[in-house]
Image (cartoon, rainbow, N blue to C red; front, side, top):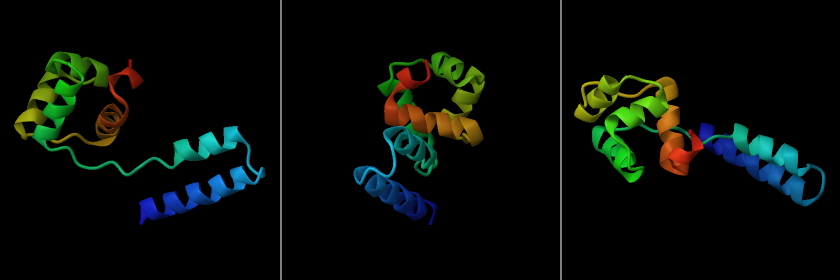
Length: 101
């Protein structure tokens, strides 16, 4: 439901932008507010994101401001990312590690 609402808002504002009613700054603000849904991250996905960005467990932990043992637990499946960590993983997956450093 959330994604369909965000899509609808984005399309409406985009149409308003094309017709000159909404400026580029407002368009960018709307796009940043309508963030995609953040999905779950199983251990193999976390490992894949970390390796795709050429990071050690300790380096990923430092970038996400968590402990290396938390990354180890995620990758073993004994703990799952939640809250801000899950959103940061989503950003890294979509945009690369450069977005956080």
